[in-house]
Length: 165
Figure 1 (cartoon, rainbow, N blue to C red):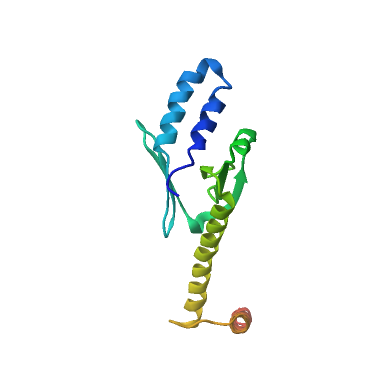
Figure 2: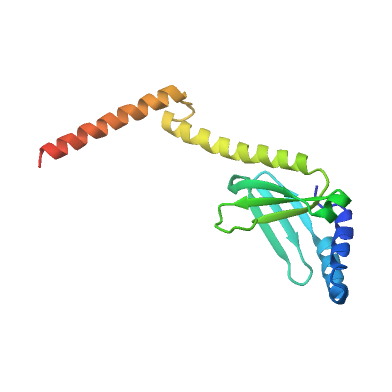
């Protein structure tokens, strides 16, 4: 999905009606935001861009995603829409990226979870492969045994250093 659902424009305009004096300005801004809003899901992450005069683009890699939340206010639920908020470890309490205008949020959430896990799984497997050598994978039991041997060697070195003082 590259563009938000057309019902998002309806949601924007109905939301702007809450403030009648500002409606003309908000309507123009939200109309332009809707028509320039684009999403791109590729191999490394998600890209979201929007804007006419001031173009903005946000990119979040799958490996950086910490949490995925689905939110919908009353108006969005009435229109069958929801927002997907992506949290990263950036240190901010707000979402790093908010994907708006989705009708099939569960499918998108499941896709993002699978990409998150896939990105982290590849990383952890590469770390294990480095410990075992090139092209090798190390079972968890062998890895625990190797770590115990390293710890005992470090204890022996520490004892020798303390005895020489």
